[in-house]
Length: 344
Image 1: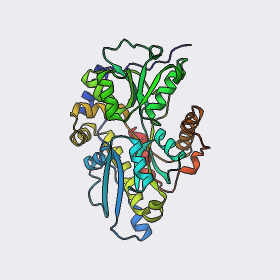
Image 2: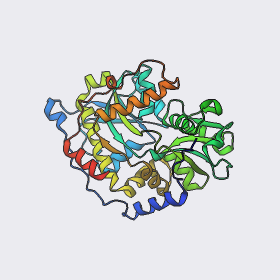
Image 3: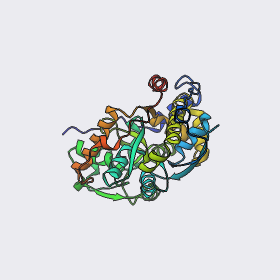
Image 4: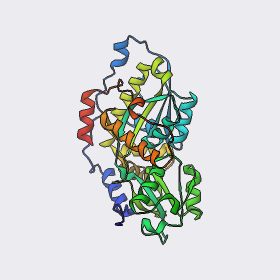
């Protein structure tokens, strides 16, 4: 069988993109989008209240801060930061937060297991930000070389998806390797020490290894998976905090559009929050370049495809209907979506 290999993500290529962004050449700078906030005025809701949101590695918080979207919020916005999607969705399931940010693979897994939440906002990114890493000096050069090796990923994550999809595309299956399910911090340690041979992970972790020259991407997600991300909210929050949620997702969308034209400024703030260099932060941003989109038929179909894939390998064991888990009533402003399409 012909081996599926994505173009190799080299340190030189990644740093080249980072350098262009830092110089303001990657994309023309965009003014911060005008943000329409109809929710409070339309509903007659008064200012106040608390919205508790789950974040991953300060991604959303830094976007809002860098773009100025944390200004003049008419309610209290509380962030809880997590290292990966799984704990975000666990907190959402426990009712510890009102809304959370996570990818489509993690959402499919959690929703199939009864997460009492619905998707209210979506963004698309480059699947190339999901990578199957090997150490720089590893003898592993092709996916076929993974046979008999140990690979680590977060169970039910987009990294897990990439492992299975890459093996399948190259005539292998999970029975040909040993899967070690670890959270990112543990996985990074195992990867660095040589306890595992490969690590399926995303964005910031990929950028850290590639920029440092300690890892290289054997295969990435292009042609193998979707890489959509969602903000989902609990059923209780949707019923009780709709104006706050509507305002929040609009601010996040506006911030994402701003960041597409201001990568260096965003990376400076994000890097400070997660304690990485601006070089790594810019590289990570340019790997994914998320842009907001509507929760539409295409997004629902992508989620169904992801869920069906997991069902096929036994990770999801219950019937899953993606449309039942999407709430399309938190529509973004049409002008903002148009600006997103131009920026992306």
